[in-house]
Length: 138
Image (cartoon, rainbow, N blue to C red; front, side, top):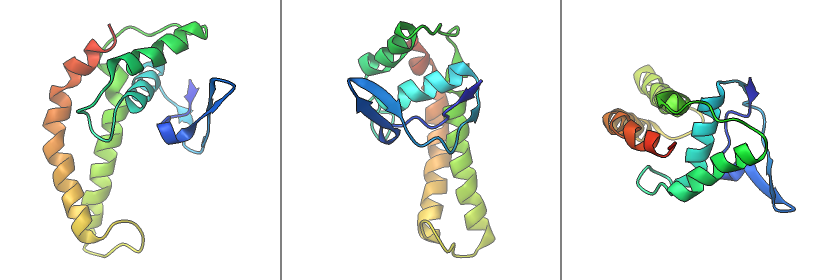
């Protein structure tokens, strides 16, 4: 199905008490579970994964159901798109660092090295937290 693929708090606007989704340039095909999982997680957490608010996460899913949608079965597929984003950002920084060329836009090379370290160090934690994230689906 065609989805937004980037629903973040900064891509939402409230109008008459209902959400309006903005910024559709990344839209494209995506499994429903991945869209719902990444959307609920991005709205329910702060900058990291240490402050996930389960009530907010669940309210996104309940709102989808209240709007007539049916939730896919729970499972890790709900978070595949989020993991892909993490890996894609880490890969982008690795390529920038390996090229050895200071990019004309974006963070400098030192920041790129730090982002690579953060991405690689955080990956085992992210995978270790998948059962906790799946518990949010219950």
